[in-house]
Amino acid sequence: MNCLKDANATLRRAAAALVLVASPVLATSNAADWSRFRGENGSGVAADSTPTPLEWSESKNLKWSAPLPGPGKSCPIVVGDRVILTCWTGENPPDDLKRHLLCFDRNTGKELWAEEIAPTTPDEPFREMFTENGYASHTPASDGERIFAFFGLGGVVAFNMDGNEQWRESVGKGTDPNRWGSASSPILYKDLVIVTAASESTAIVALDKKTGKEVWRQEGEGLQSTWGTPVLADAGDGKQDLVMAVPGELWGMNPDTGKLRWYAEGSPSRNICCSAVASDGVAYVVGGRDGGSMAVRAGGKGDARESQMLWSNNSRGGIGTPVVTDGLLYSITGGVITCLDAETGKQVYEKRLQAPSTPAPPSQADRPAEVQGFGRPGEYAQGGGGGGGGGFRQQDYSSPVIADGKLYFVRRGGDVYVLATGREFKPLAVNKFEGDDGDFSASPAIGDGAIFIRSSNKLYCVAQSP
Picture: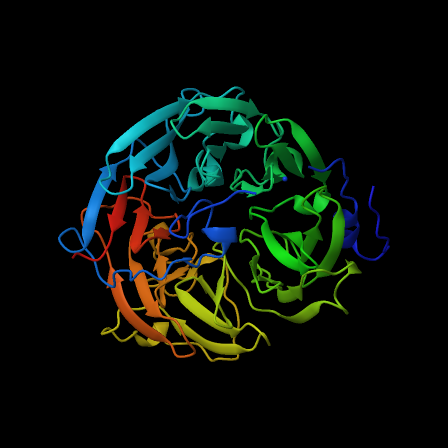
């Protein structure tokens, strides 16, 4: 057991209470693939430089669309010539719940195969805040040979690329005390599938990719009220840290064993929905409702605040994960984008999203630059002012992604904002599929110039027309 003692820091003790077990050996992907939540290492930045479209609609730059059998907040992934995502169906869930893993041809949108995954244990009741989450909020991951899907109480299920189930493993039978369900997505490291089973067992669990056998499990009370996904950060000397954002802290762990290497405490927070992001050996988090943003250089040991923390501030985030590129860190919540200097944490700009040619009404004017952070998702919602007006369709659940020098962001009502990256706020376009009134809560996937957007009704592929 790894114990870092500090009688005055409950979160620190929770982090240090992580337990270890064993170790294990590289998943490859094409540059045009987007094979896990937010693409390569969860960065949200497309690895290839193929031009992506600026504008689209049902009649412009829409390559194809495909109907979906049911809703889901999981994001599509792109592996080779296939697009893969999950959904759920049921008239009276969880009694008749079924989860679905679907595979489409990347170029045509033709459904190649679909698998139904029945629950192996009674699932969470579909009521209260859980209805905002549902049963398919975990984005799959793939190494090009297998697909790994996490279904909460349904466990982790591995499939081959033809949709045949290879193994299934439970990672816990507990439920979220907040009744929000779970949403963390699996990631791959060497021969491991690493899953944050925060709701199911207050643990991070590593499974063998080939067999599903548990390799290590790290438990910690600090994982309660955590919905993010881990990220790998370069720790120097050929090592990587497994970085996890938990309420009020960042943890850096050994991905081979799960053993805690370092922790960095920020502002206290009740929960955190977003994930950390990493770039050039630095891990960033834009905190949740209570604030607590920070940048910490990976490779530390023990308390990293003095030796590894680059900056911290009270910038608040929301449900979505930030994105960092070219020295700038972008975060969006409540219809407002905040851009921070990644090196210093100082605010570059904070602006409300709006159509390029439409001025904001006085009640929605930009707040002063020194005001950092916003309230709960839905507060300051576009079209509704403060206090959560505007309903769910003006809330922000997805995360921004970047390709071809453009930032793309999807709001739940289906509006997709396109902005130029850089130190100047420069909106370029707002796109929408007028015929789809579904829930657009998932982040897009991008590869080889195509953008894959899912709603609760359809999967879309947009790309520049020849």
